[in-house]
Image (tube, rainbow, N blue to C red; front, side):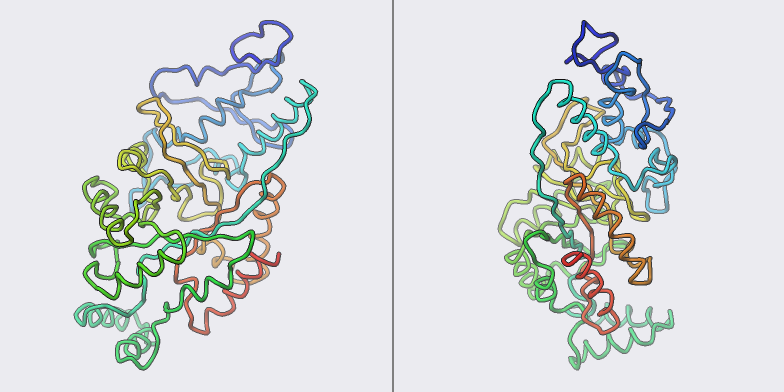
Length: 385
């Protein structure tokens, strides 16, 4: 096989676009066209086995090249999904790189007359985010009082009453029983992991107190049940020392080294966020998704190593893309529409033998009766569909 400007002979040849040998990070002109029913870009010569530079196009999408360019942010400082190439050309809902790769393998095996490659088993993983372990328990009277006043001022009378009943110990907290609820989702093809916020209270960080012994004990019990890692605080997005403190504090709590992480509010800044993770010994990140829309932010469903464009080198950090979130599913409102959305992604990934990662929050497993329909629908989609 050769990869360059022109073929050397009759070998398997892929024409190079030039992006992979460029120095630095520069604006890129992209013209999207259709090939085999899929979007493609970086068109190449007729002599190439592919009509576009599959390697450069995949590199552009997977490294999040466009997020190194100047862009406008949302109110939390995040890259907006509508600024992405995938959104503009309507392929955000496609694991496009995986689809390209399947075609590449087919052309490759046909060219060399090779047997077909074995495929991995399609699996689902639930990534459960825990911004606060309980809705009302283990909070100081001061915090409970002012949060109650806020609920009252927002005309959330049912929530105010519920809080009062829990504080007075007439009711269980609505978020109690997470482990029991998760057991109903356990199967041979569905696994799960938790990411818990364990940080000082802030404007965007509503964790329960890091000094509460009961809170500490319950988080430790959770980590003994399933893989549990820190949900990096919002404050840590621009303060590496805060990130280090979050990681060390959580490691001390569960008595294990921290190898995985998820960023609270999904505030990713390239390459700073992932560079900081890698430098602190983190091996796995579960933040690759958009907060406002379903789809594949890096155009792949498969885990991949983060390539730091600034340093022009691959890092030991593996990125695990997430395609759906609880808010995406709930936004459909009706069980039929929830099922339609879920099945589109599940069937597409099943054909590609790609993993399906879905992010939820512990609020998903709220034990109040109003949540029962959503839980039943979610369970059916994950296990029985």
